[in-house]
Image (cartoon, rainbow, N blue to C red):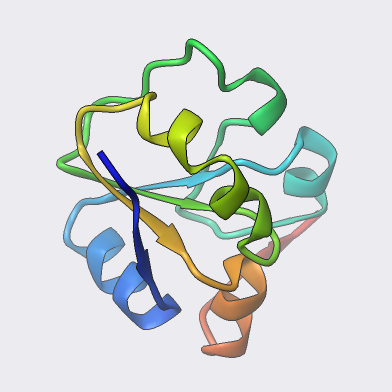
Length: 102
């Protein structure tokens, strides 16, 4: 299933409605700064991982590049409707949404 690209406002709306937000950055990046609602599932360990428990999953990284480049692997992790947060955590911050720092 192809991932749909959405902006930060659309991502926040989905998360507020029960979508799972998944941060694919590595542990140290997540520990330095993250979106409070996000679950960390580093790209380096995502192969074979099953992400379930939500009707939709929104994947994000720092800028959106890693999610775009790895869309097929991310989509294979879930049967839920899947999305990419265009611009990643940087777009989330630019929209004025909260982040947690280390």
